[in-house]
Amino acid sequence: MEEAEFIWVNGEFVPWHDAKIHVLTHGLHYGTSVFEGIRAYDGELGTAVFRHREHLERLHESAGMFLMEIPYTVEEMQSATRELIVRNGLKHCYIRPIAMRGYGVMGLNPLEAPVDVVIAVWPWGAYLGEEGKAAGIRAKVSSWRRFGNDALIAHAKTSGQYLNSVLAKIESLKAGYDEAILLDVNGGVSEGSGENLFVVKNGVITEPPPTASVLDGITRRTIHALAAESGLVIESRSIARAELYLADEVFMTGTAAEVVPVREIDDRPVGTGLPGPITKKLQGMYDDVVNGRNPAHLDWLDPVVVGQG
Ligand code: PPE
Image 1: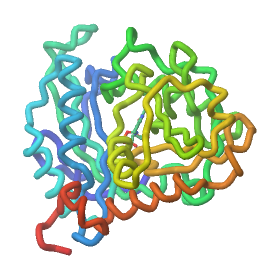
Image 2: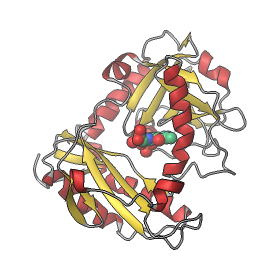
Image 3: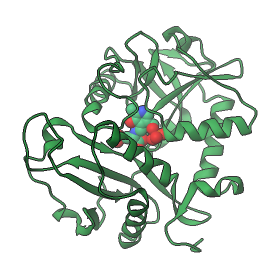
Image 4: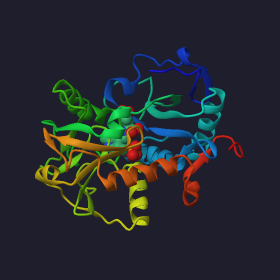
Protein backbone atom coordinates (compact mmCIF):
# COMPACT_ATOMS: atom_id res chain seq x y z
CA MET A 1 0.00 0.00 0.00
CA GLU A 2 0.95 3.62 -0.39
CA GLU A 3 1.71 5.28 2.93
CA ALA A 4 0.80 8.74 4.18
CA GLU A 5 2.42 10.74 6.97
CA PHE A 6 -0.14 10.80 9.79
CA ILE A 7 -2.94 8.64 11.16
CA TRP A 8 -5.58 10.00 13.51
CA VAL A 9 -5.75 7.85 16.67
CA ASN A 10 -8.21 8.71 19.43
CA GLY A 11 -7.96 12.41 18.74
CA GLU A 12 -4.21 12.67 18.05
CA PHE A 13 -2.36 12.97 14.74
CA VAL A 14 0.26 10.20 15.05
CA PRO A 15 3.15 9.52 12.61
CA TRP A 16 2.17 6.65 10.26
CA HIS A 17 4.57 4.06 11.70
CA ASP A 18 3.79 4.94 15.32
CA ALA A 19 0.06 4.22 14.97
CA LYS A 20 0.09 0.89 16.83
CA ILE A 21 -2.31 -1.13 18.95
CA HIS A 22 -1.79 -3.71 21.71
CA VAL A 23 -1.63 -7.34 20.51
CA LEU A 24 -4.45 -8.23 22.91
CA THR A 25 -6.83 -5.72 21.34
CA HIS A 26 -10.29 -7.31 21.50
CA GLY A 27 -11.08 -6.49 17.87
CA LEU A 28 -7.96 -8.29 16.67
CA HIS A 29 -9.04 -11.55 18.33
CA TYR A 30 -12.77 -11.50 17.75
CA GLY A 31 -13.33 -9.15 14.80
CA THR A 32 -15.24 -6.71 17.01
CA SER A 33 -14.56 -3.59 14.95
CA VAL A 34 -16.72 -1.53 12.65
CA PHE A 35 -15.26 0.41 9.76
CA GLU A 36 -15.97 2.50 6.68
CA GLY A 37 -14.45 3.03 3.27
CA ILE A 38 -14.80 6.58 1.92
CA ARG A 39 -13.15 8.44 -0.94
CA ALA A 40 -12.01 12.02 -1.34
CA TYR A 41 -11.75 13.30 -4.91
CA ASP A 42 -9.77 16.17 -6.37
CA GLY A 43 -12.59 17.73 -8.37
CA GLU A 44 -14.27 21.04 -9.16
CA LEU A 45 -14.57 22.00 -5.47
CA GLY A 46 -10.94 21.14 -4.77
CA THR A 47 -10.40 18.11 -2.57
CA ALA A 48 -13.80 16.96 -1.30
CA VAL A 49 -15.06 13.88 0.55
CA PHE A 50 -17.93 12.09 -1.16
CA ARG A 51 -21.03 11.46 1.00
CA HIS A 52 -18.91 11.90 4.10
CA ARG A 53 -21.78 12.27 6.55
CA GLU A 54 -23.66 9.21 5.22
CA HIS A 55 -20.59 7.01 5.61
CA LEU A 56 -19.97 8.16 9.18
CA GLU A 57 -23.64 7.77 10.01
CA ARG A 58 -23.44 4.19 8.76
CA LEU A 59 -20.34 3.68 10.94
CA HIS A 60 -22.31 4.78 13.99
CA GLU A 61 -25.25 2.58 12.97
CA SER A 62 -22.95 -0.43 12.48
CA ALA A 63 -21.53 0.17 15.97
CA GLY A 64 -24.99 0.60 17.46
CA MET A 65 -26.16 -2.77 16.18
CA PHE A 66 -23.24 -4.35 18.10
CA LEU A 67 -23.97 -2.21 21.19
CA MET A 68 -20.73 -0.30 20.72
CA GLU A 69 -20.65 3.39 21.50
CA ILE A 70 -18.29 5.49 19.39
CA PRO A 71 -16.92 8.28 21.60
CA TYR A 72 -16.84 10.80 18.73
CA THR A 73 -19.77 12.34 16.90
CA VAL A 74 -20.20 12.26 13.13
CA GLU A 75 -19.25 15.96 12.99
CA GLU A 76 -16.11 15.44 15.10
CA MET A 77 -14.98 12.60 12.85
CA GLN A 78 -15.77 14.63 9.73
CA SER A 79 -13.60 17.53 10.86
CA ALA A 80 -10.81 15.18 12.05
CA THR A 81 -10.80 13.57 8.59
CA ARG A 82 -10.68 16.88 6.75
CA GLU A 83 -7.74 17.99 8.90
CA LEU A 84 -5.99 14.63 8.41
CA ILE A 85 -6.22 14.95 4.62
CA VAL A 86 -4.79 18.48 4.77
CA ARG A 87 -1.96 17.47 7.17
CA ASN A 88 -1.06 14.60 4.86
CA GLY A 89 -1.04 16.92 1.86
CA LEU A 90 -3.29 14.58 -0.12
CA LYS A 91 -5.41 15.77 -3.04
CA HIS A 92 -7.38 12.54 -3.38
CA CYS A 93 -7.41 9.50 -1.15
CA TYR A 94 -9.26 6.55 0.33
CA ILE A 95 -10.40 7.08 3.91
CA ARG A 96 -10.63 4.24 6.44
CA PRO A 97 -12.23 5.08 9.77
CA ILE A 98 -12.37 2.14 12.18
CA ALA A 99 -13.80 1.85 15.69
CA MET A 100 -12.54 -1.19 17.53
CA ARG A 101 -13.07 -2.86 20.85
CA GLY A 102 -9.70 -2.20 22.43
CA TYR A 103 -7.34 -3.65 25.03
CA GLY A 104 -8.31 -4.67 28.54
CA VAL A 105 -10.64 -7.66 28.51
CA MET A 106 -10.49 -11.07 26.88
CA GLY A 107 -13.42 -13.35 26.21
CA LEU A 108 -16.46 -12.89 24.08
CA ASN A 109 -18.20 -10.21 26.07
CA PRO A 110 -16.96 -6.99 24.43
CA LEU A 111 -19.13 -4.64 26.45
CA GLU A 112 -16.48 -3.82 29.05
CA ALA A 113 -13.70 -3.25 26.50
CA PRO A 114 -12.79 0.34 25.58
CA VAL A 115 -13.56 1.63 22.10
CA ASP A 116 -10.60 2.99 20.12
CA VAL A 117 -11.15 5.07 17.03
CA VAL A 118 -8.67 5.42 14.19
CA ILE A 119 -8.86 7.24 10.85
CA ALA A 120 -6.32 6.52 8.13
CA VAL A 121 -6.04 8.05 4.66
CA TRP A 122 -3.89 6.99 1.75
CA PRO A 123 -3.94 7.08 -2.05
CA TRP A 124 -5.75 4.02 -3.47
CA GLY A 125 -6.25 3.58 -7.21
CA ALA A 126 -8.83 1.54 -9.11
CA TYR A 127 -9.86 -1.32 -6.77
CA LEU A 128 -10.55 -3.81 -9.57
CA GLY A 129 -7.96 -2.32 -11.92
CA GLU A 130 -8.17 0.46 -14.50
CA GLU A 131 -8.78 -2.12 -17.20
CA GLY A 132 -11.60 -3.68 -15.20
CA LYS A 133 -13.28 -0.29 -14.88
CA ALA A 134 -12.99 0.37 -18.61
CA ALA A 135 -13.55 -3.06 -20.17
CA GLY A 136 -15.30 -4.99 -17.40
CA ILE A 137 -14.23 -7.74 -15.01
CA ARG A 138 -14.61 -11.51 -14.99
CA ALA A 139 -16.55 -12.85 -12.01
CA LYS A 140 -17.26 -16.30 -10.60
CA VAL A 141 -20.22 -17.33 -8.49
CA SER A 142 -18.60 -18.40 -5.24
CA SER A 143 -19.05 -21.75 -3.52
CA TRP A 144 -19.12 -19.68 -0.31
CA ARG A 145 -22.60 -18.39 0.48
CA ARG A 146 -23.04 -14.92 1.94
CA PHE A 147 -23.83 -15.36 5.65
CA GLY A 148 -27.50 -15.43 6.59
CA ASN A 149 -29.31 -12.60 8.34
CA ASP A 150 -29.81 -14.95 11.27
CA ALA A 151 -26.06 -15.48 11.67
CA LEU A 152 -24.59 -11.99 11.27
CA ILE A 153 -25.72 -8.50 10.30
CA ALA A 154 -25.10 -7.73 6.64
CA HIS A 155 -26.31 -4.16 7.18
CA ALA A 156 -23.38 -3.59 9.56
CA LYS A 157 -19.87 -3.08 8.19
CA THR A 158 -18.08 -5.15 10.80
CA SER A 159 -14.51 -6.47 10.49
CA GLY A 160 -15.22 -10.06 11.56
CA GLN A 161 -17.91 -10.47 8.94
CA TYR A 162 -15.34 -9.87 6.20
CA LEU A 163 -13.89 -13.37 6.63
CA ASN A 164 -16.84 -14.46 4.50
CA SER A 165 -15.75 -12.06 1.74
CA VAL A 166 -12.10 -13.07 2.17
CA LEU A 167 -12.92 -16.74 1.52
CA ALA A 168 -14.89 -15.86 -1.60
CA LYS A 169 -12.23 -13.44 -2.87
CA ILE A 170 -9.39 -15.95 -2.46
CA GLU A 171 -11.40 -18.65 -4.20
CA SER A 172 -12.21 -16.43 -7.19
CA LEU A 173 -8.62 -15.18 -7.58
CA LYS A 174 -7.13 -18.70 -7.30
CA ALA A 175 -9.56 -19.84 -9.99
CA GLY A 176 -8.34 -17.04 -12.28
CA TYR A 177 -11.24 -14.57 -11.96
CA ASP A 178 -11.22 -10.94 -10.84
CA GLU A 179 -14.06 -11.05 -8.33
CA ALA A 180 -16.58 -13.30 -6.59
CA ILE A 181 -20.37 -13.10 -6.65
CA LEU A 182 -21.90 -14.59 -3.51
CA LEU A 183 -25.35 -16.17 -3.34
CA ASP A 184 -27.44 -15.74 -0.21
CA VAL A 185 -28.57 -18.63 1.99
CA ASN A 186 -31.65 -19.12 -0.19
CA GLY A 187 -29.64 -19.33 -3.42
CA GLY A 188 -30.55 -15.85 -4.64
CA VAL A 189 -27.86 -13.46 -5.86
CA SER A 190 -26.43 -11.37 -3.01
CA GLU A 191 -23.35 -9.25 -3.80
CA GLY A 192 -19.64 -9.20 -4.56
CA SER A 193 -16.93 -9.65 -1.94
CA GLY A 194 -16.73 -5.86 -1.58
CA GLU A 195 -19.39 -4.48 -3.92
CA ASN A 196 -23.13 -4.39 -4.47
CA LEU A 197 -24.45 -5.84 -7.71
CA PHE A 198 -27.02 -4.77 -10.30
CA VAL A 199 -28.49 -6.69 -13.23
CA VAL A 200 -29.87 -4.98 -16.36
CA LYS A 201 -32.39 -6.74 -18.62
CA ASN A 202 -34.57 -5.11 -21.29
CA GLY A 203 -33.80 -1.64 -19.95
CA VAL A 204 -34.82 -2.46 -16.37
CA ILE A 205 -32.26 -2.51 -13.55
CA THR A 206 -32.73 -5.10 -10.80
CA GLU A 207 -30.91 -5.46 -7.49
CA PRO A 208 -31.16 -7.97 -4.65
CA PRO A 209 -33.53 -6.90 -1.85
CA PRO A 210 -32.37 -5.78 1.63
CA THR A 211 -33.17 -9.29 2.91
CA ALA A 212 -30.53 -10.85 0.58
CA SER A 213 -27.66 -10.25 3.07
CA VAL A 214 -26.35 -7.20 1.23
CA LEU A 215 -24.62 -4.17 2.66
CA ASP A 216 -26.73 -1.05 2.14
CA GLY A 217 -24.04 0.48 -0.04
CA ILE A 218 -23.69 4.21 -0.30
CA THR A 219 -22.54 3.95 -3.92
CA ARG A 220 -25.68 1.86 -4.43
CA ARG A 221 -27.79 4.67 -2.93
CA THR A 222 -26.08 7.12 -5.29
CA ILE A 223 -26.87 4.87 -8.26
CA HIS A 224 -30.53 4.84 -7.15
CA ALA A 225 -30.66 8.63 -7.24
CA LEU A 226 -28.82 8.91 -10.57
CA ALA A 227 -30.94 6.19 -12.20
CA ALA A 228 -34.15 7.91 -11.08
CA GLU A 229 -32.90 11.20 -12.58
CA SER A 230 -32.29 9.40 -15.88
CA GLY A 231 -35.77 7.88 -15.89
CA LEU A 232 -34.39 4.41 -15.20
CA VAL A 233 -36.30 2.04 -12.95
CA ILE A 234 -34.57 -0.08 -10.29
CA GLU A 235 -36.50 -3.09 -9.06
CA SER A 236 -35.51 -4.70 -5.79
CA ARG A 237 -36.31 -8.42 -5.75
CA SER A 238 -34.75 -11.84 -5.39
CA ILE A 239 -32.51 -12.60 -8.38
CA ALA A 240 -31.90 -16.15 -9.65
CA ARG A 241 -28.37 -17.19 -10.62
CA ALA A 242 -29.57 -17.84 -14.18
CA GLU A 243 -30.58 -14.18 -14.48
CA LEU A 244 -26.87 -13.35 -14.32
CA TYR A 245 -26.29 -15.53 -17.37
CA LEU A 246 -29.30 -14.06 -19.23
CA ALA A 247 -28.59 -10.42 -18.37
CA ASP A 248 -27.91 -7.69 -20.92
CA GLU A 249 -25.57 -5.99 -18.44
CA VAL A 250 -24.27 -6.59 -14.92
CA PHE A 251 -22.35 -4.02 -12.92
CA MET A 252 -20.95 -3.73 -9.42
CA THR A 253 -20.72 -0.68 -7.17
CA GLY A 254 -18.66 0.27 -4.14
CA THR A 255 -16.66 3.15 -2.76
CA ALA A 256 -13.35 1.47 -3.56
CA ALA A 257 -14.51 -0.15 -6.83
CA GLU A 258 -16.79 2.75 -7.93
CA VAL A 259 -18.95 1.53 -10.87
CA VAL A 260 -17.47 -1.51 -12.60
CA PRO A 261 -18.94 -3.46 -15.54
CA VAL A 262 -18.97 -7.26 -15.29
CA ARG A 263 -18.19 -8.69 -18.72
CA GLU A 264 -18.17 -12.39 -17.93
CA ILE A 265 -19.75 -14.57 -15.22
CA ASP A 266 -18.84 -18.26 -14.80
CA ASP A 267 -17.20 -18.17 -18.28
CA ARG A 268 -20.40 -16.93 -19.93
CA PRO A 269 -20.22 -13.50 -21.59
CA VAL A 270 -22.62 -10.97 -20.07
CA GLY A 271 -24.69 -9.57 -22.96
CA THR A 272 -22.29 -8.66 -25.77
CA GLY A 273 -19.31 -9.15 -23.46
CA LEU A 274 -18.67 -5.41 -23.58
CA PRO A 275 -19.75 -2.76 -21.05
CA GLY A 276 -23.39 -1.92 -21.84
CA PRO A 277 -25.02 1.49 -22.38
CA ILE A 278 -26.77 1.71 -18.99
CA THR A 279 -23.63 0.72 -17.11
CA LYS A 280 -21.59 3.25 -19.07
CA LYS A 281 -24.16 6.00 -18.53
CA LEU A 282 -24.31 5.45 -14.76
CA GLN A 283 -20.53 5.12 -14.58
CA GLY A 284 -20.17 8.49 -16.29
CA MET A 285 -22.78 10.11 -14.05
CA TYR A 286 -21.04 8.72 -10.98
CA ASP A 287 -17.73 10.09 -12.18
CA ASP A 288 -19.35 13.50 -12.62
CA VAL A 289 -20.93 13.66 -9.16
CA VAL A 290 -17.83 12.52 -7.25
CA ASN A 291 -15.76 15.10 -9.11
CA GLY A 292 -18.18 17.97 -8.50
CA ARG A 293 -19.22 18.25 -12.15
CA ASN A 294 -22.94 17.85 -11.42
CA PRO A 295 -24.24 21.12 -9.91
CA ALA A 296 -27.36 19.33 -8.62
CA HIS A 297 -25.31 17.14 -6.29
CA LEU A 298 -22.67 19.38 -4.78
CA ASP A 299 -24.35 18.68 -1.43
CA TRP A 300 -22.86 15.17 -1.60
CA LEU A 301 -19.38 16.67 -1.39
CA ASP A 302 -17.68 17.80 1.81
CA PRO A 303 -14.84 20.13 0.73
CA VAL A 304 -11.69 19.63 2.77
CA VAL A 305 -10.90 23.33 2.59
CA VAL A 306 -13.90 25.57 1.91
CA GLY A 307 -13.48 27.78 -1.15
CA GLN A 308 -10.42 25.88 -2.38
CA GLY A 309 -11.78 24.90 -5.82
N1 PPE B 1 -20.82 -4.81 -0.10
C1 PPE B 1 -19.70 -5.09 0.58
C2 PPE B 1 -19.54 -6.44 1.17
C3 PPE B 1 -18.72 -4.11 0.71
O1 PPE B 1 -17.61 -4.38 1.39
C4 PPE B 1 -18.92 -2.85 0.12
C5 PPE B 1 -17.87 -1.77 0.24
C6 PPE B 1 -20.12 -2.61 -0.59
C7 PPE B 1 -21.05 -3.61 -0.67
C8 PPE B 1 -20.43 -1.26 -1.20
O2 PPE B 1 -20.65 -0.28 -0.20
P1 PPE B 1 -20.36 1.25 -0.45
O3 PPE B 1 -18.88 1.43 -0.44
O4 PPE B 1 -21.02 1.94 0.70
O5 PPE B 1 -20.95 1.61 -1.75
N2 PPE B 1 -16.54 -2.22 0.36
C9 PPE B 1 -15.55 -1.32 0.90
C10 PPE B 1 -14.33 -2.08 1.36
C11 PPE B 1 -13.34 -2.51 0.34
C12 PPE B 1 -12.09 -3.12 0.95
O6 PPE B 1 -11.47 -3.96 0.29
O7 PPE B 1 -11.71 -2.75 2.08
C13 PPE B 1 -15.27 -0.16 -0.02
O8 PPE B 1 -15.63 -0.18 -1.20
O9 PPE B 1 -14.69 0.83 0.44
